[in-house]
Amino acid sequence: MTVQLPPSQSIEIAGPCGVLEGLLETPAQPQAVAVICHPHPLHGGTMTNKVVHTLARTCNECGAAAVRFNYRGVGLSAGSYDSGVGETEDALAVIAWAQQRWPNLPLWLAGFSFGGGVALRAAVGSDAVRLITVAPAAAREAPPVQLPKCPWLVVQGDADELIPAEMVLSWANSLSVRPNIQVLAGASHFFHGRLMDLREVVRTWLTA
Image 1 (cartoon, rainbow, N blue to C red):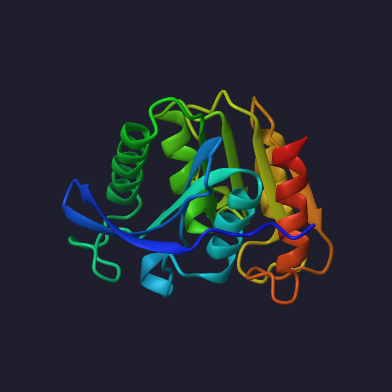
Image 2: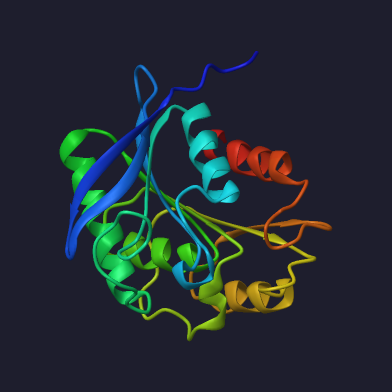
């Protein structure tokens, strides 16, 4: 059965450095609200990235309102790049906005590449009940001091040319709280030709 996906609505959210540009897709009766974080802003990452779009629409299919946003300095969002620190503050501001709009709905967080690290840090600083990180660039960093308490999915392509699968798997397996790890054979960093496979992995985990 084909799920009728909701239309996209342009929104503005008050952020720490000024207005943040966003996109909102809301099912008729949302059962959760998902905030999705995009890739690195200095390498062309925006909220319209195809992996971010796929994550948002998969969350819609699973009954969640999806909020995408541009970090400070991206698109029409005020401010300038802040090495992940300010971008995490932006994500927390978007989470606060979403929870004010839907105070009784559970919070899901998702992020791709650089956005995976942003989502991970935001999950620790919020009451998220689900976390999805796709090809997380956080694997390049020192292990996080704090880890999320919620169920956590890592999706990684084993042909990732930017963030090697071996690095991500070693990082994930070294954590004191290990995420659920799903590896897509032959998938590159941007999941060219594999977005439907990514969607199915995420959908299956969210509905399990």
